[in-house]
Length: 279
Length: 261
Image 1 (cartoon, rainbow over the protein chains, first blue to last red):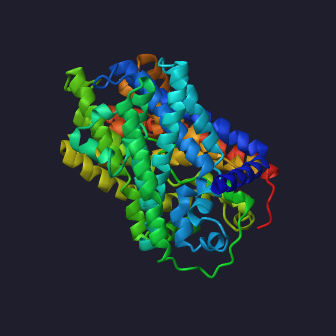
Image 2: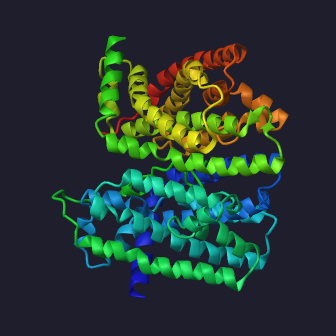
Image 3: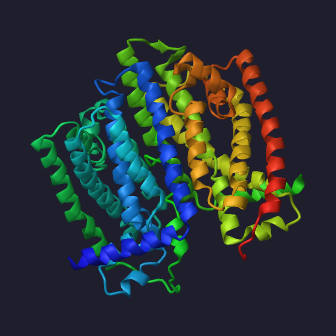
């Protein structure tokens, strides 16, 4: 409860900071909405020509893309620093958070809001609305699935970025796995054979961000919900371990740390994002 | 021109200063090509055809490899220019004894060469392993002038987006939208030949297709006739966009506000 109060205060401050540049904030939100609509047109063209991919049609793509986009947007909005945690660690910028009496990991990742995440988050709901699967109870499932997918995604980001405690600068590796997660998450899961699926449910858990939540949104099933909750629970369990272990290896920098209002305006370097690219 | 050649050489050597980063960045093409292979293998199989709109599965994969190489190889010029305006360093660049746009072009090309080469190597090896050698390996040499032209086109459009930072400062929304338009009208993820006829006609006329589709298709179909068609359209767009860029630059200078420095 104490942490929730703390998080609420941080998010409120982040929002106020982002809204200080109202025009820039709105440009980013509207720009990201437009970006996602234009990107999805590629899938419309594809399915118009080829109809379906092993039973996976354009309507399924709307739902998958929608839930992945909303989950990505939610993490960008609430835990924006999860995208550049490795940089923060490698450059000794954790000092600032270590000196304050709050959980270091939580404080670090929640200290930044990526404004364009709002565009991604909203787009997901619109995409679901256009999917042809829309029902009111489906909206509730969409919200639940987004929350569960966002938890898995945030945990994945923290896990991979925390490797910087051991290996130093990990920007390229972090971008690589992030792009892989988003790319595999968006594509129809019916494309992949059993070995590839094994990877998508374990090492790169993209299936828990795209295909599985989409399946749950289309039709309620206790089995799918159980799988999503297990993934969420496992990721919640694992996410803080590397950071906790890694903190023992952390070497403080001698730089004077300041936080600027411009910190909220930096974008993650993504070729992918639901968002900024995907093959 | 000697000073721009020197700027190009310095940036080229600088790009080799961190080989690990260069390689790491280029590895991104591997999962992209692998997933393309999965998608198009299933699509060709479902269509029950070896050739769709004149392209085999192998052609499609090699086409996409070159399209990805062009896209992943180009540096984020618009973002760099926007950062220069935001942090005030634009003041130091503008008062140097060189042309701002030619300086940006020289550095962009210097950053592009090795980045694109490594993408081509990793992407090429992946595609070779998945579907075999390209049907026309000589197509790569024939497509080289068009690849260079593609980067010039990308530079012109990205520099114009970057120059808009003189007025709006943050250009990320424009870069996202440009990238997506290039994906659609450039045939980045789906070759334009697979599009409906009306959309193909429209897309093939736009500069995006000269920047991605033209060179990539030339690589898999290296005929003299197609080479002339791709190069003439590309040169026409380069001419138009260069004039437009020079005009936008002159207008932009009058709007620029330097933030300290």
